[in-house]
Image (cartoon, rainbow, N blue to C red; front, side):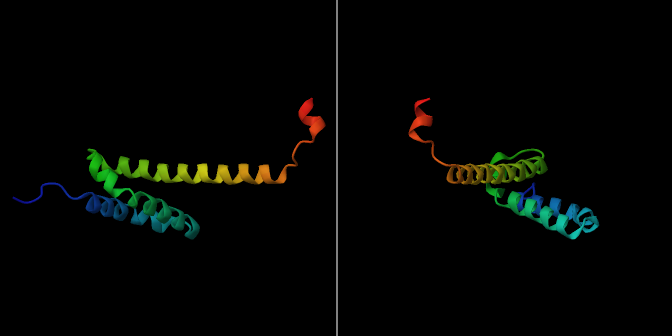
Length: 97
């Protein structure tokens, strides 16, 4: 008996294709940003398949959000490291106050 549901990869490619006209209407830099979001979601297709969610696009959006949040956390860490590296260490008198 054949498969009754499309694979998560087929669902993903179908959703990506459904946004093709939207993508074409965007400015070039926005097209690249949208491409990055879809690439981020594609990294999590195995998890999306395992979730077997009734609405796969919601899972794709969550995967995009997950990757954006990971990037935000990474950038926060970089900023904190830069702030620590550029701030002078307190003197002995300042630590005793």
